[in-house]
Image 1: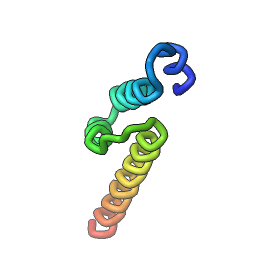
Image 2 (image 1 turned 180 degrees about the vertical axis):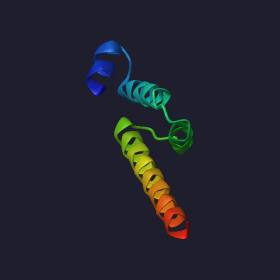
Image 3 (image 1 turned 120 degrees about the vertical axis):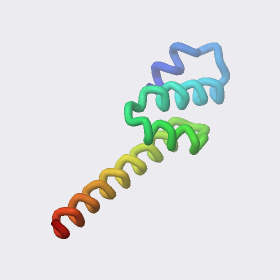
Image 4 (image 1 turned 90 degrees about the vertical axis):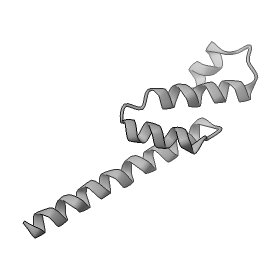
Length: 75
């Protein structure tokens, strides 16, 4: 994605390219909660945005699994 952005926006400054890449990445996140949380993080570079969204998804997945196990044990 970084390579495509640098080619598509070669005339832009690097910080502008990075900002656009972050915006486009966040826009294509399908899960609404993850997208909203990632947008609120207000990251300035693509790598930290990607890392954050992956951590958020992993934590959310673990929470769902834990809740499912608790409900199964109680039921």
